[in-house]
Image (cartoon, rainbow, N blue to C red):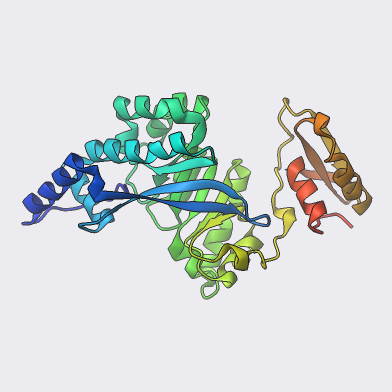
Length: 317
């Protein structure tokens, strides 16, 4: 489910047969689930659902289906297969790849609606989106019901910053190609830093995709990425020092917050750790000070986590 554009060739009829085989017998397609972990605590914040074909390359299968005009039918079938996981597991959100064509289909949106509060919809930057605002409007109902949006393959497609600003997603997923080159390319590092900074400016969190080495995780942690996925062992990932200062929101906290804790010194961190045991406090934010001024707000749970694990926030002694 990538949304790539593919030009047909003499083998189109063979691929049409492969698509029809997949539609007629979904047992040919294997559902695979990859955890998305938060930096610092390593907790699973979401699970990405993927479909692998036992017969042909999965990405090619969906690309060919797109070229044949059969992508929506194939996506509906595979999405239904992946959504079964939500009915079996009481876990985190399920992240699903969707193409613009599927989102525009009312049947797909109606199928997703009952699971809205449990899903993240991933739209690839590689998808050609001449009118991203129209795509955003198609998602209004699902997002109002709790669905979240992720911009996938950020840094590897047709205009990620433009799409980021137009779609205003909750998540931005840095492409594996970008992540793998952070240590070797100053250009890739600057690109990744720009994506993360702008993501935070629009209220989105960043996910590093395809993390395989602890050095890669350390690099994205330094940029302020909040989560990661990949083949790096979770226990090994725990050795990476995470700068808690990165999780700061520039705008005032929502009016629905139950409280705001002023943080101006390490003493306040101790108080934050003590008060975090009071379950009656509800949900809130901490105001972060630097040189006597509030520079942003951080989720109170992150403050408590930083305290318990010996971390500090920027601007604090």
